Length: 446
Image (cartoon, rainbow, N blue to C red):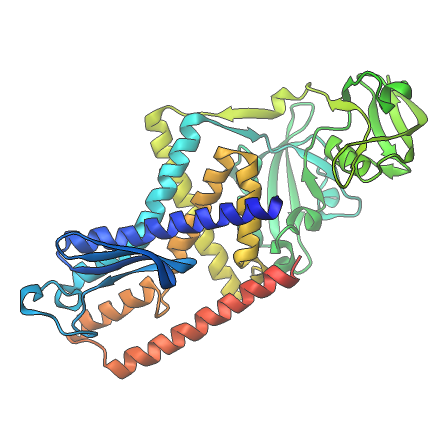
């Protein structure tokens, strides 16, 4: 079921974002008076096609759903009839051609703004950047960061949730070895803390390595019991509402989620439980139940406490504010993507961040299950990445074609066919290398 959800979400996401990208090329080309021969979603042999309009443009869906293209009439690839003279791509002004090439990425950024607008208008729940568990002998411990501290600023930039905090941390680590925190302690006191990284910063930018490398983690609700189910193993062991489970089978428990995961792996097993009640440490032994699913999962029979409402808050904006916030968020995400990619080239950021279709499908499935807002956020981020990648000055991509058009404008004539062919071959090699790296990361990293 998980594979089905991921695959479905991936195909939908790719199909939607590619359609938006290619529609940008298509509509601006039409507005510039160009004749469109084909609009294809996917590559390879069409599985469905129809011709429509006075130009009899072919609209089709092709077998390989990993891209798409718009084919304009072009004098360089076929002879142009007299009735269509002046409507070919190469017969239009260089400004018109560049506008068409820019339109695809522009529509991706436009979609991201729309997606963020929907998110911010409807409201999205965010968690305050509270620090959770601190590892001993870590950067965070050396800096004096403590459990329950709320991050207010990172290098003088205000952060309001963990998404902003992570973005700032990665941006700083990519170029500096010092991170300055302003935190508010549990006693509401503002203090300054400094983390100095004396090791290789590159390793901290690997997927999933940031918090483990720095030695602190986002706060999570502790394993405090909010409710005990009647007849459950917890009730039979006399566990009560308000008890905090701190260890299971001598394994320390840092959060309710961690406790749930450990319990799930022990269906029908006897476990020892260490817990706190009114500042008193207690011990008990019990036999877990199990679910009816396959494979079965362990069941303790407790629910999480709901005394942590002040940790989360709802980000909801009025329409005008939502528009401005959406534009700012798209710009921030685009800038972050460009910085990270640039730092990958210099070696300051791990190339393991280049994801292939397997990883993208995984995150598509996870975000789809998490809800509409999370899936829209995923679509916005992928759309921004698609826009940025297509603007890279690599032949075969929009950015490379813009470079060709700019050179033609500067020299007063097109590049020779041989030069364009060499450029395209070079571009193919780069794209193959990036695709190979992405597939390698999917299969062997993490």
